[in-house]
Structures are given as C-alpha cells and as structure tokens.
Length: 228
Image 1 (tube, one colour):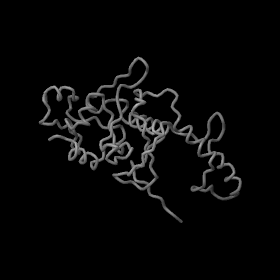
Image 2: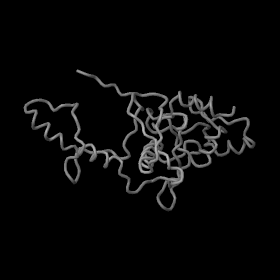
Image 3: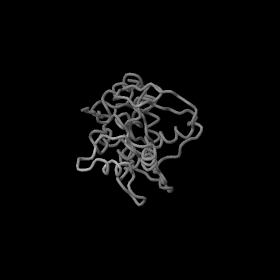
Image 4: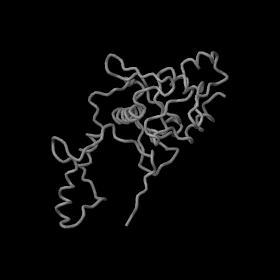
C-alpha cells in the first residue's frame, strides 16, 4: 500500500477540465478493460495509463481553440523550458532547449489557468478589459521569475495589466504577505503609481484561497526585485 500526498498548489491544472467521457466515448478507455478484468472487485484507484489514453487526455486538457489570451510574441519563444515532475519545491532547475511548440503550450497553459484564477482581472488595478477580438488585456506574471527558477504554478503568479506587470518586474511595486501593494521610494512619480492601484490598496486575490500568492515567492520578490 502506498499513499501519495500532493502539496496544494504544487501542480498546474489543465487549461480545460477533462471529462470521463465525451461525444467520442470514454476518454480513458483503459478503464473499461480494467473494470472488465477486475470482476466483482472495486476498480483500481491507481492504474497504469496507456500511451493512447495519455495522449487523448493531454489533447483535451491542453486544447485551446479560442484562447482569451494576449498574443504571444514569437520572437520571445525560441527557448523551451522542460521540467521533470518532482515534489513541490520553491525552485525548479530547468533545461532550456530550442523547441518552439513546447514553449508555446507551456506558456498558454500557465496563462489560461492563471487568468482563470483571477477572472481575467488585473490584481493591481482591478480592471477587467476584453478587447474586440475577445482577448483579455491582462498578462500572466511570475512572482519569482522563470530565469531565477520560479515554477509555473498559480501561487507563483499574478494576473497583471501591461503597465502593472512592467512596474512589478522592475521592482517599482511589490506585495506584502497580506497582499498590500508596496510602492518603491525610488519611483520617480509615486503619486501616479498609486493612482493606478485599485482603491483598496491591496492586490485582488484569486477566487480560490489555495491559489493566493505564496508568501515564499512574495518574500523573494521583495528581497531580490523590489526597490524599497
């Protein structure tokens, strides 16, 4: 008997929930064989997944025919980040390889899940703007940046408008552990910076408490990025 403990927030959900069955039938078809083979006993909770079932689940989970996302700059997607599955850690060493497709998939999934967590609304300004093409004018920002081994998980992300994202990455704003927006004393026009922050003075949290920015990542940003 083995027990697997999955740390909340240590994984990234599919862009689309994958149902047990759809118009094409059962998605994990190996379940039918398993149920027939184990007659009179409970179906195995832990079971191997065939390559065909795995690919079928992955295709449905990552399929994104009409993404509500900003366009991806192709020039910035020449490097791919590929991770081995591991236990929840605050740093992830990444092997960078030159594969455009994998990078695009990874970027889209992170954006899709993060924007959904924040209801396509900027956590700093509170604005939710959808352009004429049906795309959310908000970006998926890492708190601890990828180049500094920040993982692609919701608790290491914020949904930010372009201006807020720029200020956050350059350390002009940051967040306390209770999500109060901090403004750098080195900002050349702090009053204007405060003017774009929503009236509460706090970043708007995601809908699920488990998706809130993790204090470890916020502390890293304050220590390494924020210009206090």
